[in-house]
Amino acid sequence: AQSVTQPDIHITVSEGASLELRCNYSYGATPYLFWYVQSPGQGLQLLLKYFSGDTLVQGIKGFEAEFKRSQSSFNLRKPSVHWSDAAEYFCAVGAPQGAQKLVFGQGTRLTINP
Amino acid sequence: NAGVTQTPKFRVLKTGQSMTLLCAQDMNHEYMYWYRQDPGMGLRLIHYSVGEGTTAKGEVPDGYNVSRLKKQNFLLGLESAAPSQTSVYFCASRDRGQNTEAFFGQGTRLTVV
Image (tube, rainbow over all chains, first blue to last red; front, side, top):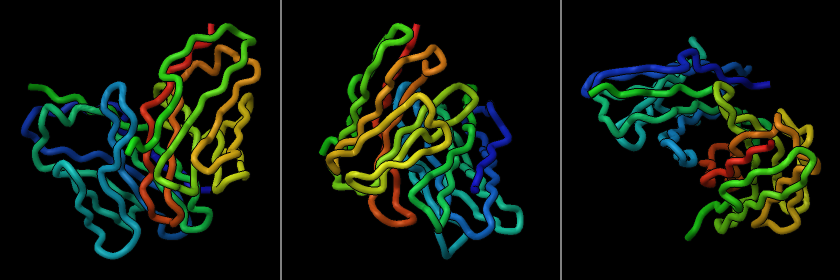
């Protein structure tokens, strides 16, 4: 069965600094990968997704993620964070077989220092 | 276009009481899901449905039942609530396909005392 690990529970960065959130997945083939963001008290919103092609994908709000098959990773990056990026971020994986299910990581809470 | 709507948004139950959470989507999506979110645990899949009249168990199905009598609605039932079911519950829906985006409701905060 597929699984997702987000090693960092909580990350704090200063406004304007760069950001990288880690995501590792476990699956025997190339999965479908997603990053979602959850603002306090809200539901989840899709930032970006990868399913084939270019391994560097662009998303909304200036985020990007890179799929690295050799490392089973799909890390989320942003060159310069804004205070409004403070939220919880979830990586999710869907398997090509039985792709109806999305499995989520534990989440990474991002705090922005002014 | 409302997207995914969950009812109610908040609820407090006493141990042993029952309740039903309603999820409604207006996007004609085939797939619907119920997740629970607990601190440090991420989102864990309770049950899901790949079409009207079908349901399947997720990671943590015990203590919950679901029904999908209409394509647009997915109900989550708690027959006898327990304090361990205190959580935030999210419903999501997706269109048919392997790489489609899941759309989430705003969540239901349930407290069982």
